[in-house]
Length: 203
Image (cartoon, rainbow, N blue to C red; front, top):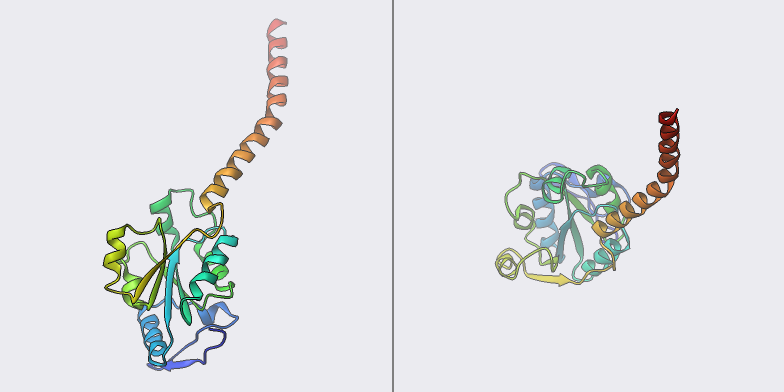
C-alpha cells in the first residue's frame, strides 16, 4: 500500500507501509497476524512471498513488482542468516540479515517485512498470514507441495525468474573473475621467486 493509516491493536501501534524500516518490519508473528487480520477486515487482498534476497538485484525488484500486482498489500518473509547457511552452506548469505531486511523495505512494492527463523515450524509464516495469494517460484515447491499449500492460501501463483542471472550464479562468476585476476597477478611474482631460489641453490 502506498499509505496505510496506523492501527492500534491490543494497545500497540502497528504501522504498514511507510518510508521507515521500523514502521514496516514486524518481527513478532502474533502482532503480524493481528495486523493482517485487520487488513483483511477492511477488504485488502494480502499477497505473501518469501526468500533469501541476498545481494539484492533487478530480478528481486521485478519479482516484488509482479507479486504486488496480485493484491493490495505485499508481505515479504526474509530468511535469517542461520536459515540461509543451513540451506546454502557456510559462505552464504553474503549480506547479513539486518541489511537484507532493510534493503527489502526500501523496494517500493513491499509493504511489510518479517524474518523467517531456522527453527520455525514448516510453513509457519504462510499459516500465520494465510494470504489471499502466495507468490512462489518453480524451484521453491514441488507440485504436491503447491497443492497442499492451497489449504492455507486463496491461491498460489508461480512466477517465472525475473532476471537472467541468479544471486548464486552472480557469486560464482565473481569468484571465477577474482581467481583469474589473482592468477594473473601472482604467477609472474611466484615465477620470479622460484627463479631466485634456484639461483641461490646453484651457488
